Image: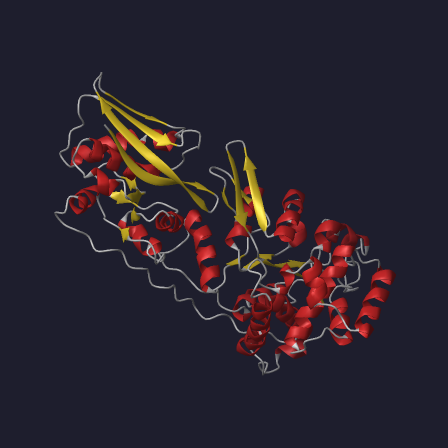
Length: 504
């Protein structure tokens, strides 16, 4: 007799069903696991053996074979411990096979039979719901998995509790969703003195998810401005919250199963490796650009990042997804993020100050910003210079307009875009529009069209740059409450792209 249990194997954010088949047959005592298991899965037999002994259950003196089907799909991770134990107990007639076969299980076993939390409970719950099965997972993973309303989640703390539940001795209540993470209030834009143009650029960037580069001397407030950007973004919609949480579930960064409606804000250091930024490493895990999906990715000191990392960002910025290809893995992660980047004008940072600039000026600045390639710069919609704040401005009172005021305008513009793209689920904001859709929604009036043509011819805008100006102009019109893209909207969009030395 072959007993069957079910679990999942992760390929990016997708949880692929895996059938765990267990056969106990006559022969020399042995316990083997087949079906392309990695080292952690192969070691499951020792953890399962010890956990059963802790429950005073002895393995039969027969040949035990566990097959993980489909056999050509690589199996990685310790979450296969629990489904292997469930299939084995069903094969030993300790658990009812019909109940085990209707359950998707994942969890790591400790040697005393306890269940250790694992990553990926949320994607596993979605797969279980799609297959009309229950989900069995460790208690610590239950609040996370229970956010999938269609899934019936059972979350014991030990293997013995799971056995008592399936045998009807002590049934367990379904797990309840974890409390939504209550985030600390965002930093307020009232604390920023001056820098009105930079605030305006951030507002436009947030309204249409347009990428922004800030260039300015050290201490001019670039990082301070970027840190306040999440506060003006609207909360995650239910669909966006689920998408984002699935990625964070695979990365193991969800706290106590709580799901936040606040958009993620990732700011990796410039010394981070390419797998850390883009994704990869063991198991092809998501990187910072995927963890920033539906949120903000802030790259401070942009020219200091390695050339390989910067060039790898070109494709994810354009397509909204990243393909991590390795010898044993080929997975795709979503990464539709708002890129905020900051850079000094040169290595010393004082290129614009004759009294403090180094002797290599202006070649120092050209060499330094030249580390940002033209193709990458062409994908950045807004470029601004952030001048140093005058000492006299530091004594001024707080600005009248704060984060809440800017956030209200951004939310109104996002609502307009939600209605505009209601019938096209793949498009959510103006930055996603392209082709005929862009021509339809962002066609400027005759005066604006003439201005854009003159600018494109005089400054040599690329075709990509031309279309990105149109997207930004459409967002500015949305903030202005205008149905038509007019000349002032085009002029402002052009002004945010034509920065000396950064024109594409």
